[in-house]
Length: 442
View 1: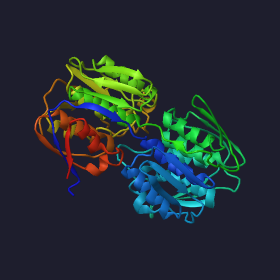
View 2: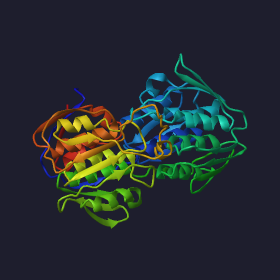
View 3: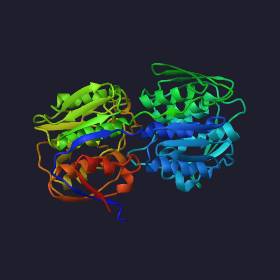
View 4: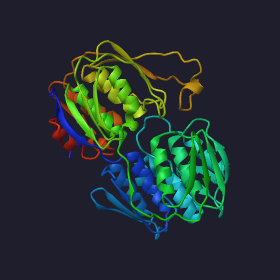
């Protein structure tokens, strides 16, 4: 295997796509399942590399985790007997850091290495560690081994913590740490993403006492969590946007099923403004299509309910086919433009531009360093024909975007790094082929 896709572009893609389960819900639910007594069943779990890596990691800890059907996972932590996370598997997946929660509840002491995953910017690990410490967990980092050592009291954590800036992962790990125990925890300025709501729903269905009031979360620790019925993983909003852009950018039409509209409302609003076709059939089904020349539209990424950072690489491809100049301003991560030079190989006209920001420390969601030079905005000159090229995928969402661009382009392209796309997209090659796209993994 060369770990690459051969892509023949220049064809309008048409058809139907059923959206798979959300990666960012499935991974967190699998980890949270280790908090439960007895086994846990999760349905609509995507068969992707990240899920496989996480289950390998869990099995290395002594727990049981496996697919019982194509998209059904069964997890049993009753025989988990190790409190140190395997470095090899953890280096491949960012959510490994969240194993702090079940390991501390089980053993009161654990060892977790620095997380892996896509290098799209410095992850706000310090916000997570600060929150854990403030709520009563002792945490020390050994730079020699690359492991964090954490210890928690028998009664669990307690107190109140306010995030300086909302952290998706930080919110979820502190929720997990607080769900069991004898105390109350209050979290302020938490992340508002729907994936956080799904984690709360999953835990509450099994006996947790968690209440969310805007960006404030109130948690009363309970003695145990026991699943009463299988939990259904919601559909992946990132996959939905990928196929929506694929439809419009190739001047085709794709009907997307199993996607609650509220998950992609901001994207739909922007796509309509840019002249893309959108037809909503019900709250779970929507048709995206090309019906007129696209207009350029500037976007600025921000946490939910804003324009999601994971969507902007797709938007960049779309804007190469729109009239005029458009700007993408990235506020969430400081290294999200790995795809720019790759799109240039296809003939895209993109340049980095400076944008004045009055108070960058408050404006950007990452930890802004005034001594560092950032490139947070690009200008795209659109209505540009794309041609074939040899491309290299460097992160998950950018990878899907490069395949879209290759499908828009004329000729045959080689896209290296197929396994990166397979980290987060289930049956991506097959779904594109069913739409008439010429994509083949080699």
